[in-house]
Image (cartoon, rainbow, N blue to C red; front, side, top):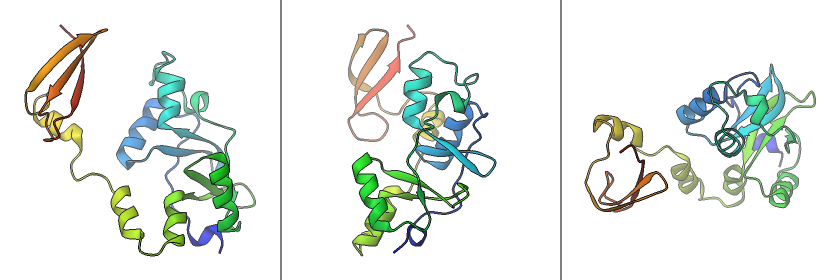
Length: 186
C-alpha cells in the first residue's frame, strides 16, 4: 500500500514570510499543531506550536515581527506519495515523529501522513476512536473565557502567588477541579 492511499490531502500551509503570529492564529483556527511551510507549491519547512514557543516566544521574539522562516524547522523528514506505508511507518518510528509531509517528485506538497492515518489503516475499527480524538472539542475555552468577561467560571478554593503568577485551584469553568494559571497583575 502506498502513502497516497492513506494520507490527508488539501493541507493548509503557510508562507515562510508570514509572521509567527499569523502561523499561531492559523494553527488555532484549524486546531492543528503544525503547518507545512511552502514557498509557492514547494515545501521548504514545517512550523510547529513547539517551534513558536521555544524559538520565538521563549527567546523573547515578537510574534508579530518574527517571520515563520526564522523559527521553522527546515531540515524536515518527508516522504514521496508513492512510498510504501510500511517504509514511512518505520521512518516515523525511528525519527520519533507524529506527522510527515508528503511530496511529489518535484518536491511539491501533496499531503501529510500522520500516525493516526497509519494506525487507522493497520487496525480496522480504530477510525472512530481516532476521529473523535482528532476532532476539536465541543466548545472552545476562549469562548467561555470571553463570555465570562475575561475570567473563568467558578471561584478558586485555594490560591498562591509565585514568581509573578497566581496559581488558582478550585472548580474552574469546566467542572474539572483543575488548576488555572493567571498572570499576576496586582
